[in-house]
Picture 1 (cartoon, rainbow, N blue to C red):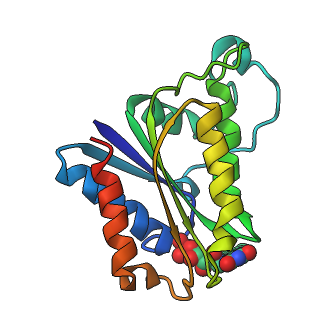
Picture 2 (cartoon, rainbow, N blue to C red):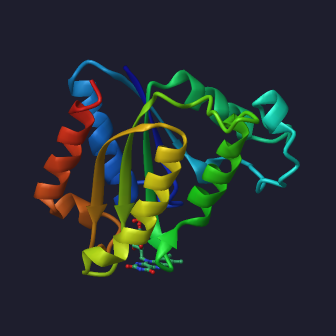
Picture 3 (cartoon, rainbow, N blue to C red):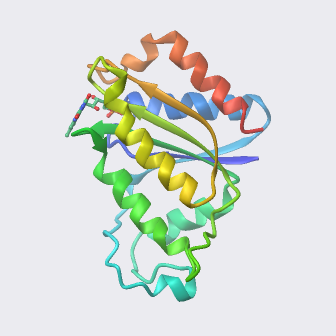
Length: 182
Ligand SMILES: Cc1cc2nc3c(=O)[nH]c(=O)nc-3n(C[C@H](O)[C@H](O)[C@H](O)COP(=O)(O)O)c2cc1C
């Protein structure tokens, strides 16, 4: 089992990154292999809706996307992590999901179906309700692509960059979610 962590926060070692890492630690502890990317590290443009991908199942925009696409296709499992920005996923996560449209064929069958997936959402508000919309957006993405959802980690009340580390219960949950991939 090879699992790719996708961090859609620009903050390296921030809360989203910490929780994605903890899931990946769980994967490793069960004998799986891991890789991780920060969407912000890649020079990728928004989807331009040219629809050429529907014939080729490949995006025709020439930028950093192909490197990400290769990593996704190689992985058996995906961990998609986003901070909440204005009660929604980050722009990086939206951009990532839109470019994944290129995995669909004209019958809307996805080249990434059958993989396993876990979701991470982190936010500053103390109320769990603030994570709902972002979690739902990623859940819908996974369901449409027929990715088998194995777990969801939602962290609230994150004021400082590494607050997630203080929530030991959540960290343990994240680790156990990683173990479920295997
Ligand atoms: C542009 C921006 C918008 C945000 N909007 C919200 C919001 O709507 N609700 C919320 O609870 N937190 C919001 N936050 C706080 C982040 O969700 C929170 O700090 C999160 O833990 C950041 O994740 P990170 O540490 O992985 O970067 C916002 C932060 C930024 C920078």
